[in-house]
Image (cartoon, rainbow, N blue to C red):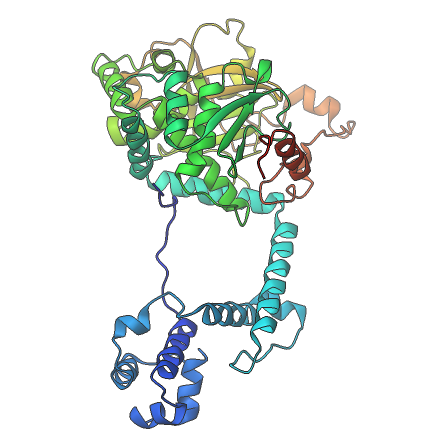
Length: 489
C-alpha cells in the first residue's frame, strides 16, 4: 500500500536516457552505427552524439530512428534504462556533467562499451559516496530552514489536506474491522499484526529513537515504563506509518522532514478518522461551538495532535482558513502552518522556524496567564488584519511550549471563545512594537549592555550526520543485537 510523496513529479526522459535506449535497440537488432546512420540519412558522428546524449534529436529524427529500428516512440521515450549497465552509464555520465564533479577538477572518463563493467561499478560507487559526503557536509541549518520553507509551501498549496494519506488510514482501519470513533490500544496492536509486526515494549530503547523496527524479524520495539506512558498508540502508528508509506532511507534532510510529516499525518488520520472527526467538527460549526479541546477529548489525543488534525480538515471539510503555531517559552517558533493570510516572522530564506514571535500575539501572552487549566483566547490586531487565536501550553523535556490555532476575524463566529475580553495590538515587524524599548529605559541602557546569548546548538552546528539525523546507529545496532530472538540470524 505505497503512497506517493507530498511532492511527486513525474520523471521526464532526457537526451541521455533516450540515447542509451537507441544504442540498446540498435545493438539488439545487430545493426551497426553506420547502418543506422545510413537508414536515417545522417552522418555516423551525428548518430553517435545522439546515442551518447550529447545532442537532443528532433521529433522527426526520433520518428525516423524508431522506424529504422522497428520500434515505437514509446520504446524510445521510456524513462527506464534498458539494462543495468545502461543505468550505470547514465548515472556516471550525469555525475560527470554535474557541478559537483566539475568542482573537483577531475577529467571525465569516457563512458563507452570499452569501459570494463567492474570499473564502471567502482566509479559509480565512488561517485555515490562523494555525493553522500557532500550532502552530509551541506546539511546545515540553512538547508534545514530551506527544507522547512519548501515543505510548508507544499502543505499550504493543498490546504494541509492529503487525500492519499486519508485513504491509507481508511484502508488500515477497514482491514482490522474498526467501526468508527476513537481507536484503542488494542486496535493499534491489531493494525501492527495486520502489517506483520509484533510489538515489544522495552526499557532500554536507544535514547535517540522513538521506536525501532527490526525488519529482519518483523518486530517493532517501543519504549516501556515511564518513557512510553501515554504515547503507546501514537508511537505504534507513527512507526508503522513509515512502512505503510514505503519510506526508504532519506537521501537528504528535506526527504527526512517530508517523511516525518507524512508519518505524523497518517497516524493522526488513524487516531482521528476523517469521517468521525469531520462529523464532530461539522456539528460544532453548526452550533458555532468549534473547540480544539472537545476534539482532543473525543479521541483521547494530545491537544497538539488535535490542533494539527484540525488544520488538516478545517479548509477541506469546513471551508475555514486557519493558522497553527507551536512556540517555545523563549518566544521562538518551533512549528507553524498558515493559509489564512497571517504573516509569520521569517528570515531571508522564508523560514519561520526559530524566528521570534511578537510578544503581543496569543502564542506569547499565554505564558503570562495564571489560569492554565481554562482555554485562553485573544484577538490580535496586526498589520495584515485582525486574528483570533486559542492557545494551550504544554511542558516537555525541552521546556514549555504554547500550541495555538487561529483564524481571521471573519471566521471567529464559528468558535467557542469568541467572546474573550482579551485583545492586543501587534505592529511587528516594526522593531518598536516589542523588540526595542523606547523612552527612559532605552536611554538608560542603550550602549551599556553586552548580553551573552544562549542559542540552540542547531543554530550554529551542522545537522547531525547519518541518514536519520540525530540517531546513534551504534546504539540502535547494539540494541537490536541484544534483543535478537534466540536462534535467529
